[in-house]
Image (tube, rainbow, N blue to C red; front, side):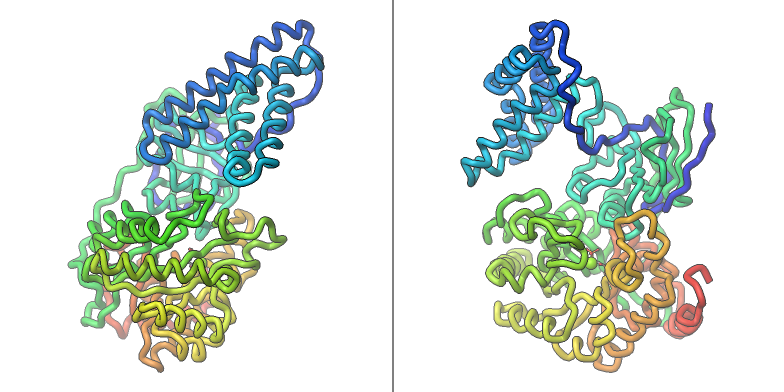
Length: 536
Ligand code: PEP
Ligand code: MG
């Protein structure tokens, strides 16, 4: 048995092992050859393949609920559609082409018809393409594209996963996640951490790794082949660190220990973990799979569900950060050459202020429903003017506290001016690193540049910290940097008044701060800033 080991970057802690399941990204266009020797026998393969696919989707629908169940039932009906099947059968016999090719062409004809019909019909095109690829995969005897339905606890191996796919992973069946792409601050990594699934990213050659079972070490960042007959091993959850639940240094200087959340379940877990509030509610995570702008009433209900466990406590709601790796169908432009540098975050709101205003309306209502002390903040702000535009609009909408994220280097460099325009700032170290190092946070090849210990990143943070301290305004840190218990101390020394982290890191960060005096935090800053390298 091979003992080969692949190195990567560990982004979500824990060790697990089990059968390896590879995620097929897309099905390539099936060939028109070879011509089937017996076209009638070839045509007869279409219907059973379509029925198998429909039955599989129906089985998944039976375990889903609400909208998901409705969508899956409709998709199953689409797979078994007699019109699709008979058109494909006719193509096989008339043109003497393989069944897979015939399904491809028949489904594309349907997709074109839906596109021409426009409106709701056009929105179903993606579903037809999904069904098409599944039937083709069945005919070709290959894995269907997308995250497969797991029949046993397994390790998923993918080139990368979209945030929407990662958010839908079931921690009971996904033992661990391995991707070829991605960095420590990619949204896939962030979601894996919040689900408690061990994950290693930037693993070159993971998809070509010939192992039917693998062991994943999310701490060390490695993947190795194991005996396929060995029973699967799920990650053991590490015992909670000792922390009294009050965010403060050992000598009593208060530092809010808050949580990053994106869904009601995260918020409940964060409250149970002892988070003192929410420092970053990624509202776009509620809508990654949504084609149309949610109504104010729907948004109000979704936000209230997240805020409810934090009644009477501070919650920072970030307005939609659509774009880049979190495209939202109803907001993001069709295509941009460099989406991370494109119309993302607050830039979308400049084009669609009506969407922002409706979100504010829903946030105000959800705050009243839940009793949480709500502030709002904008993502991807580059200048003080943009910051002022946002805070004025939020205040006018009746939201008492409004701030911005510092995640673009220009905003960090003009922190004085930005702070004059806002009630608080929160540093998004994930994007601040990405833009400072010109290193795509989703790209495995540049993952080490996105290390939050990089002195250049910390120097930018010190500029913001000095400005915030001088003006007596709060500076939070809500990027993944804050979740490193050692770095948390440096961030506090740099002037952070709160740290917002995934629920699993709340206690460790709280305990780390409680174990050190404010003077020690401040003392660690010089060493970190002057270090020649991140490792040093
Ligand atoms: C960040 O960029 O650091 C941040 C917290 O925002 P997000 O990860 O959602 O881009
Ligand atoms: Mg960001």
